[in-house]
Image (cartoon, rainbow, N blue to C red):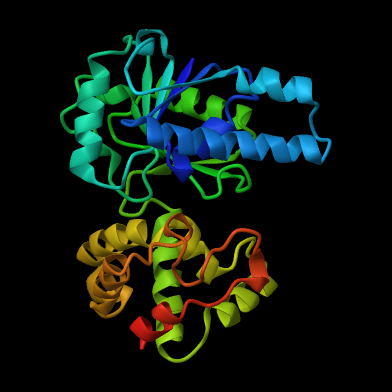
Length: 298
């Protein structure tokens, strides 16, 4: 029994890759509206599988029956793993962990889907830090194979084994890393991302960067990746990473640039606009570069 906290793009994606693997999944959010969006994302994904004849209609119904959407903590006492996918904010994640620990059994693992927040800080006030682990998924979760599992100093071997087992069952390529700044992937991506934004400021377009990085072998273009992850999420990560790495990450203008983009609601796919404009029926290379972004990046 697995519960996913947060029905946004990441939370819904994690539920998506779990309900067809034999797990009973609870998707929990604070509002029915958020749950409806998450459920729609999941059901549309599986409807596409039916259209492509990857699964039958009967299999679709059976898979979706493994998903329970709720705003309460009902049945959390039966959960074996909680995967938290709320917004990238340390105090929020600590608050969620404190609330959840009062409602789950002793054996239950608490996994945080954080991109960069230190797991030991998330678990700082935990009653059972040995049961807290990082499980960093990548967007879109149903397409991206990598899963980064993060071991804090107090995380037990048994907890790591549980996280690896779930990840492998979800079909992921699993790596286990230490609880350092940015872990492994975000540390690399933020330095690469800083260079992407320098190139944009120097006159390259998002499409130039996407073409070059995809030609090099990246599954998703590096400009599109910012829109997929969410520029609001990138803003939090950039601020935290700048604190740790300082000038090594480049000048201090990048976190401020991200904040300016967020203030203008240019958060990526989730808000319909970021580096690109997102419209129904318009895919990939046909998307229009966002003129608002071009103006702000100058």
